[in-house]
Image 1: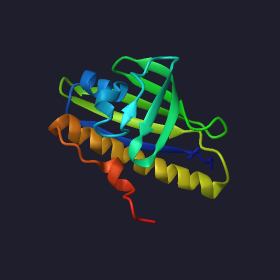
Image 2 (image 1 turned 60 degrees about the horizontal axis):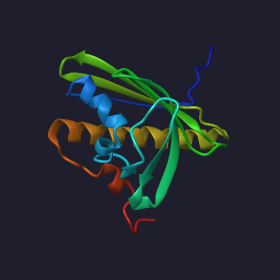
Image 3 (image 1 turned 135 degrees about the vertical axis):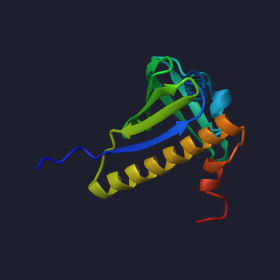
Length: 155
């Protein structure tokens, strides 16, 4: 029996908005900051680096956009040079007002237990991102899911 590569995290969600609006929400930091990171240095552009910041955690990282296919796909590379991974968003228009978003984070490295932790954390994180995007885009509600995932004072 062949064993499939399980070194990836996957999160998916239907968002009841047109694909153009959903795609733009992940490209434009003015929108993305309403449900994920707090600040971005600019819109994602193919073959360009962008800085994303989570001010509540005092954390920033640089992302390199490898693929930007309008309303279809985004592929970025992020992390440290030694431990970077790829994140791929696929946007599927279900009809004029519904978009199915699939996010796959792949390329985890390390020992087996470390990879399991990375896959679990990434799956959880991207599920929160999609839920936050859904709430914001469909209902204009900022749930603060990423902020509240690691509240101050909790070890």
